[in-house]
Length: 135
Image (cartoon, rainbow, N blue to C red; front, side):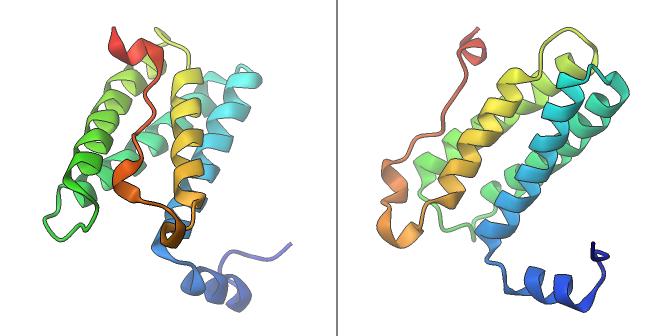
């Protein structure tokens, strides 16, 4: 297994598009949340949720940047989803909620990131919100 600082890994990361980097980061944290939840590892879950929250904070800051080229309605939907992630993550970390909705949201976002933007009208996509977000 290669060290993450190997020249191969550095070149691989350097050649990834921003969407691929976002998807890869989200896949890593989502996998950690899922594994910790399945194994009932509360410390691992808290750590993974903390990293998920940091990732979503980065997304929110990027989405709020006027230089972000996504359509305004999509940016607003994703920011709203990110704010829900912050709130729900706090509940999960306190043991008051299940991480299943966070995991599903991340998987939905990964699916969206995996779509080739040349073949997709970004303005037509809506962020997928879990049922408990409406409460």
